Amino acid sequence: MTTKAKLPLTSKKHGSTRCVECGKLFTATPDMPTVETEATELVGGRPGWYLPTRPVAVRRLWHAACLERFEAFTAAYRDQVRADNEALIESLRA
Image 1: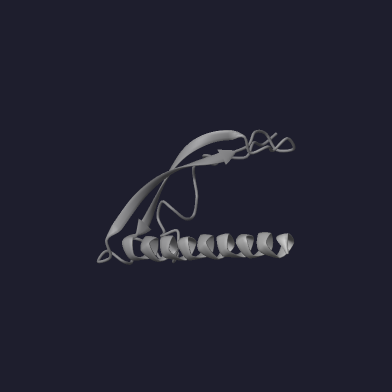
Image 2: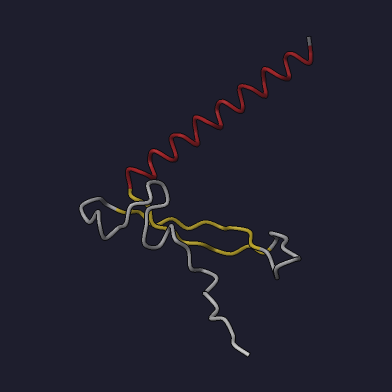
């Protein structure tokens, strides 16, 4: 009986060797400044009973410019959602 080698759960393609936003290798772009972020992600248990309920701290590396661009896009998206919700509420009131 052969056993498969288990990969560590924290092994991810993006966030350790590549920028989360642009996907470029950090070794290929040594001139760009990097920023490390820490967040909490919800992960699940065993396969078949996957419920994302266990909080785990995750650190990721970003290019500084990519992080600024991502945060600006996220802020604009939140503003758009807020405006759409307000418009929907006003249309329901009318």
